[in-house]
Length: 120
View 1: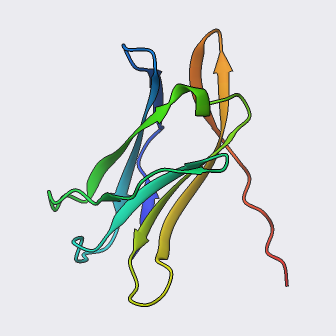
View 2 (view 1 turned 180 degrees about the horizontal axis):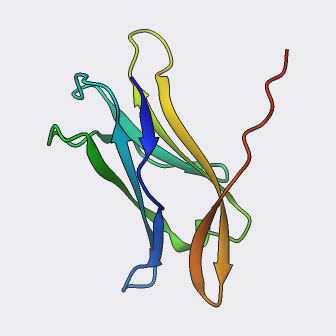
């Protein structure tokens, strides 16, 4: 299964002020069974809960996250993962995107991080 980002992610502070709302648009490039898929985020040392993949059957969707404001600190590492659960083992990561949190004039944002070079 191949997944790719489908446009820029967006970030904004929720009206209540206690959370940052993040939207990550993605596109699935293959026909697959979406039912077992989940997605989650990690920020710093915090791992967000896994959410079920939307059952709409569409190839283009947006992954939405509601992140506590106190976790969304400048230069913090933010990762999104799409997972396929595996019986009796860790879930298989099908796609991931790594970003770094940036704040500019009170507005949250995400900047891409370079992927580390493979080690042999």
